[in-house]
Length: 591
Image (cartoon, rainbow, N blue to C red; front, side):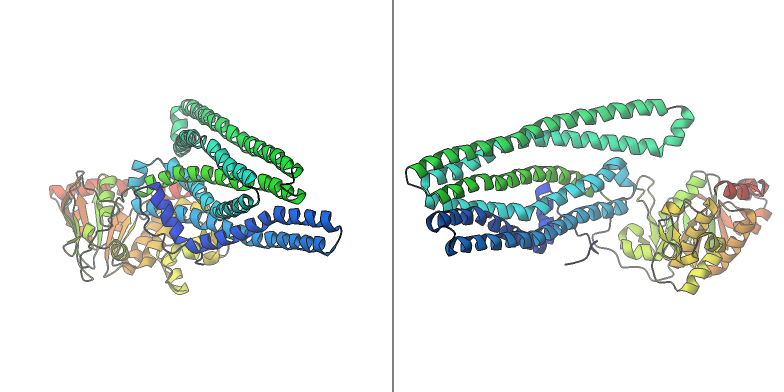
């Protein structure tokens, strides 16, 4: 069996819930077959007990405590041992079926979430995505966990019914036809149950989304006094979920009651008819016990089937929710036929801004509106296909949308302004590609001026970072993210405001070290800090509309007297006149 999680989540069919569930069944058909085999053996061994008990009773009545009675009792012990042994394997494979299906669905959603980008949250509420992984994936897994035992129950029912028909036609027909009638009556409640469960699921998803949105905007809500408004909305939606839950419980309770009542009535009828047959000499006492035992026992497979119907209903509802997430188109889709990759050292260009990034140069991008320059820079990494802007970014004359995405991600790396760190070992958080030596890790941390992080994390590179790296200050997180970007050693590195949260002295050291580390390799830095601009090869000024205005070295632009240079000095002059302790205060406040 392949270990979990799977290296490749696969490409499931998204046309319908049934096709998705069948696709997943095919992926774990081996475990399903083992589960069905163990479930069948376990159920058949359990079904043998009424027959063996009846034979033992007849043997005891005929010969007393003789050898024949003890033989039948020994066979009952064997059947019990088989039930226990096969039950262990059945449960083991049932759990594995659940885990494989649930983990596969969660992995598919996670893979789509990472590849779809912002188009996912624009299409599906964040809370709905969370609910899909936390609730829907396990519900799908339950169907596969129940499949083996249900198959065994159906096979046992067929064989037991065939045996009873050969022993007594009347009683056999009552049981053979009565149990399906009971199942049909119970099945009538499945459709209204499915409808009410779907409504509850949708209401619960809206509640989760509302809670997630409220938590994410909590600081803003407090600032404008909107907490009470959102609390009232959350209370209303909570009551809506409760009302739907009550409606589901009403139908569920009726079905549960009928599952006990109807098989019980059937057992009473069988016992009455069987007793008459015994009095008339048509059945032995042991055969009556066998028939009564099957009347009670076969209610178990019926309950299994009904439970399977309910679980399958939930699985179909959940599968549709999963499909809704998986159908979201990626913000940067993979081309069907990727173009041939340009040779290393090719220039990059952005048609919308007119920015050309020459190979082997460290270039800074400056704009009065930092968001404009950041948007231009991130287009170089194809993090979003900004169709509305009409921008076409090319590498060596080939559009980025035409290149293989995996190839592009290896050649061009974008480190955004807000660093994202995951929990785990610090060395793993920095070396995301898992190929750096210890010395290279330390060198990257030194270049990013992050040596103090090694002291603040117990264990240094081998120490554990908590979720989001919250034990580090804002400046430390930014420097760890910079070391991570440098360690990828890409052909083109894009750094967006890499020193915005550090003090002036650290910023100066980082600027000089990064310039030395990236010398001769294509690098784009979005910044308006003179401490950084003084170390780059070229500076490009963008207008607030996102078009290239002028370019040159930092010293040249400061010394020129034309209007474009004046615009440049107006932008960087604000940073030059800032209090030198502001950045230090920022980092200290973020600790």
